[in-house]
Amino acid sequence: MKELGEIRHDWTLAEIKAIMGQPFNDLLFQAHTVHRMHFDPNEVQVSTLVNIKSGGCAEDCAYCSQSARYDTGLEKQKMMAVQEVLDKAMQAKAKGSTRLCMGAAWRNPNKKDFPVVLEMVKVVRDLGMETCMTLGMLDDEQVKQLKEAGLDYYNHNLDTSEAYYDKVITTRSFQDRLDTIDKVQQAGINVCSGGIIGMGEQHKDRAELLRTFANMAHHPGSVPINLLVPIEGTPLEAMRGKTDAFEFIRVIATARLLMPKSYVRLSAGRMELNDQAQAMCFFAGANSIFYGDKLLTTDNPEADHDQQLFAKLGLNMQAQVKAQRDNH
Ligand code: SAM
Ligand code: DTB
Ligand code: SF4
Image (tube, rainbow, N blue to C red; front, side):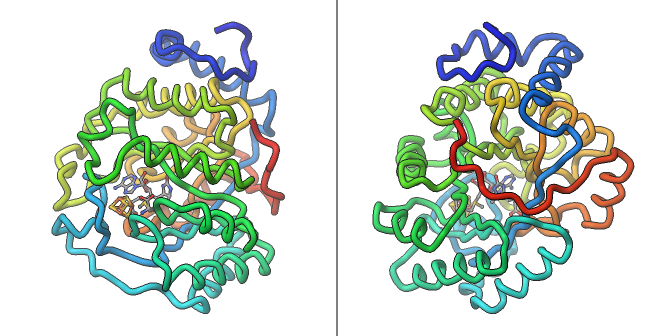
């Protein structure tokens, strides 16, 4: 590493592997040092997820409960009404959440539903919450309309390294994902993009995934690191319990070191991490989480439990912030 905390876009795979593989205490010390350069170490940003369109998805993502290709027992539902999203937003806001992240089980949004999506952005924004959408691939016109509606963040994950990608998803390419991320960034919407750990990938895949983000011209403002939630009926069901929490914490710490100014989000999989492991994630540089008892289709820790954990750690939930538009 050249200088700790320097914003760079020219990381090599060898450098990243060396960072991620160094003794755990060295890694955590470096990551925490960099974390303190740009963030209050005792503050955490919280977002709440709402699944606005559940199940029946055409894609074959091997981890996903919502793919129509696997029998996961999930009931397909039609798109949620705007009023229901508004109700959920109000509940989330009352519990201290500052951003609503609305997800849809789509390959890409269709013409009929898109005006409703735009309306959702507007009503949630009018409530004084930040808005995030995750709707699959977007075309130029859709990106433009989301920007005009006032969308703050767009979530679009790369999930894993380019080399491992087709072991997980075959119905769209790594390049398709990069193209959507690029459009979103160009339009001035904050990018939220990360991946999943625990899908059978190797260390070098984790390093490559982080390298892709770290070498983007603009680091994503938000980098969600998910621990696979193994879903019965999906091809990755058998990965249950295969990932060591320390390995996951190493990825968080490395993300913090490579992208010093980005929010690193401790995302799916918190049910599998005990409070001590989560505390280590916060020490390693995670400074945002999904908050509320449901992710999209699976369980997340109860808000009350998170409140107790925050109290034990002296962590404060970030009050309303303006989305950072000038992130590198
Ligand atoms: N359909 C859209 C898409 O794929 O971009 C948006 C919703 S999709 C469910 C959002 C992200 O959730 C995925 O890219 C993946 O990273 C994450 N995710 C989905 N299922 C997961 C699981 N079982 N464990 C961990 N992360 C998961
Ligand atoms: C992200 O990286 N993780 C969130 C959000 N972005 C959309 C979704 C996690 C989903 C976990 C599995 C489920 O609940 O279906
Ligand atoms: Fe569909 Fe998104 Fe699930 Fe893939 S991750 S199957 S695109 S909902």
